[in-house]
Image (cartoon, rainbow, N blue to C red; front, side, top):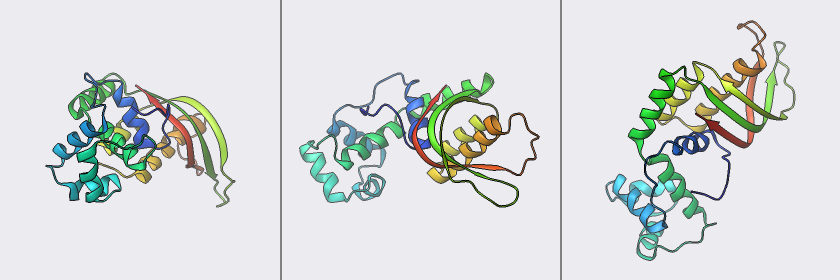
Amino acid sequence: MSLRLSADTVQEALDRADSRHWTRTPPRSTRARLTYLLKQSRHDTTTLAPLLQANPADLNALRETGQIPADHPLHQSVEREVIRRWQPHVRRRAHAAILANGGQMMLSFRAWLGFTAAAGSSDDPRLRFLTLSLQSPYPESLFTAQHQGASEAELRAILSDALGACYFHRNRPAQTSQTVSVERIDYLEFYY
């Protein structure tokens, strides 16, 4: 796993939370990680290269040498993609167990949140540090979107709705005209 202790995207934060449920550790060396990813994509570097934001020639060179600095973007892309794909059945079982037991998820984050009011005005995004519990139906929405391969923008939209409902509107009627948007994430962690 990476030396970074927290994620700055919703997808990565969900993947890191899922990694707490793994029953085996993923490959550790860059060469073993790349071999795993190539096996997942049927040994086709042209399919895998766009996911890693690289070209097939770089992947072939990395497969032969196995050497790449830890701070290189390709190293980080390979690591991120292995974490995203590792033990999908264990991940789905953990999600099902969480949802069957009330579907609660803890969230700790520091992000810039924007607010839009009824008159159409919007405040400048403000930095917030919060730890809160996301209630149903938001954990299920995040898991479903993750399983369907949703984009980061879609995951952020679900997270924004969840923050609005679970924190900012918890003492207000459900039909409020104020919305919350996650502008920029500094750090994000899910616990389940």
